[in-house]
Image 1 (cartoon, rainbow, N blue to C red):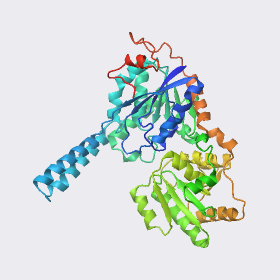
Image 2 (cartoon, rainbow, N blue to C red; image 1 turned 45 degrees about the horizontal axis):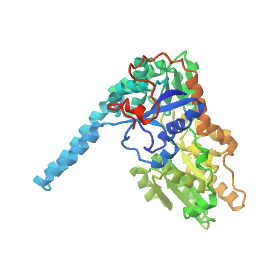
Image 3 (cartoon, rainbow, N blue to C red; image 1 turned 135 degrees about the horizontal axis):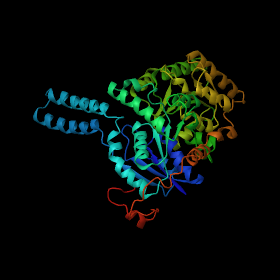
Image 4 (cartoon, helix red, strand yellow; image 1 turned 60 degrees about the horizontal axis):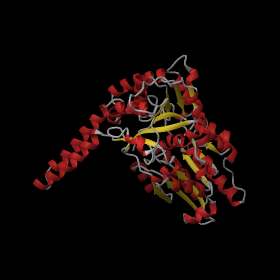
Length: 471
């Protein structure tokens, strides 16, 4: 069994769609000859916590959880204490209102200057300890996933200082991503150069769609052979043993109700507005039918205000555990999603939830022009269709599904044999193939002296206690 250090700042029990890709790889890598050792953070600020994701990890997984110190979080805590002191000494005074706000603003400004991103404190605190972990565990390869960019930078530095081969995984675009322009100029300047260095020096680079992989390969001319595409995916076992009628009863959904569900992060205002208007028209045209629109997932304040002001009667569940999200998908008659970003390269994005939609076997209505990577996936899997990003097209698509449902011949979702190509296990097998093709690193890491090969036993772990301690 060869060992790979998996570098991922966000990792279960941290929740959110981004952690499920890495979690899926970690779950299955040992089946293909690679034992994962995870280097992560104790907590990723701004992301939810989902304990149910731990059930999908190997019970004997070795992981190291390092603390993350963010300037704005430290200053926010200080601001809270300062506010309390000021209010006691000067109740209702102006200083009690402005001082905390100014302190928080300074914290965010300091965070915006950290290179390569706000997780830099975790990165720099990890370097020496991670080098030691590589030696102690006789690691033979490194895997780092973006985002945050600190993951990639840690992998790059470890590769330089240990001689280990490494894989750079881009589950999102970096400098080409729509929000990159929001960074201050000095960070944009540094990150462009860092990305070029990472793509040039990595032994293998993985993108999540063919279109994104081509964009990444353009930064490393003459090295096309080291670029690979491994999409996001789903775990079919999550749906195994669940009977649809029972799930609907468990969720309190009547058998004769037609349910349209959005499961995932409902974050884009344009996407939310178009979907809500389309569902509203659909419901007005079908007033006599029992129709429900459900949203399960993180919904930010601006989108929530759109939902609340919409004439559509919507059931908003907020963030739910992954287990509950699976049940919401299975209970739906139609699953809806969208990507209406006007940013460059947005057509290369395939949302992670699309693959779970496909695994659920439910039909999909995806709101996006047909010249997109998501359209390519849906066409190949016959699991649904892209509709033009306007309310009339959304309403017509949902109306067709309702008509077929009422006639007893509902439109079908993706067949299991087609969605299997996007199962976490199948995708992990492809990643293991990329790792197998890396240069042999058996002699790359110098002997750690007194450290011998460490097993998972308690006595072996005692040898590395102290500053280096598995979480």
